[in-house]
Image 1 (cartoon, rainbow, N blue to C red):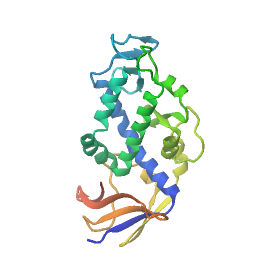
Image 2: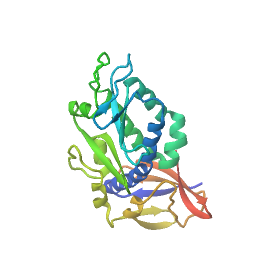
Image 3: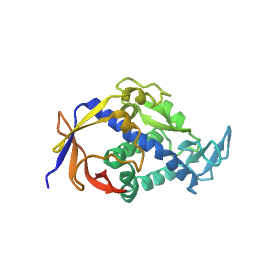
Image 4: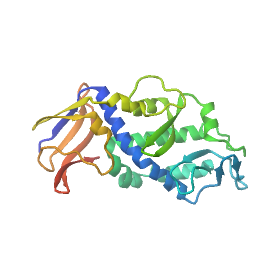
Length: 261
């Protein structure tokens, strides 16, 4: 079967698409944080300025997650380094990625999520003395490291704080400028606006507003006038690098793009 090619014509357009995919990630991220909160692995819960000491034998507080729009209100969960590594392994396990990330975000989106988790784990483990019982907040590790930002993702009424590398934050925000600590990823919205992405396929050409891509959420579909089950690839125009594979399927009696591995 002949493969149609969706061509992204500029790197700026690709960055905007990645930002659109991250929009779907941010919509789902709050559920991920709530899932973390429900896991029975927290060593202590920090509310306000009060902290419950870690259990005897633990190797200190490796990091914290700020939770919002949660039934218990804003709080922080403290984990030992061993617990976080175990949690990281569960989240990034191959079976979890296949069952969750790729289904929700597609190949490109799950790659972005994996990179964020890689950066998060690197920050947590950086400069942490396993022999010390001192409680180390993730924010303290950020001060020791370099090139790290606190990214604030706002989705409707929910605000989520992620700790990312500058390079990843720049990619998610769609900007090449230097992002200072505390910068928000909302700057990506200003870069998308009413710009258009030209998509070329064997059946003809179509244009989609980048703002439309920004509004995508898990479960949303893009409908094109092509035959069902017709595969295609998304490529960089200058390097011909394949970004992802997809095919046209059917959902609710409408043709829909389905991303594949």
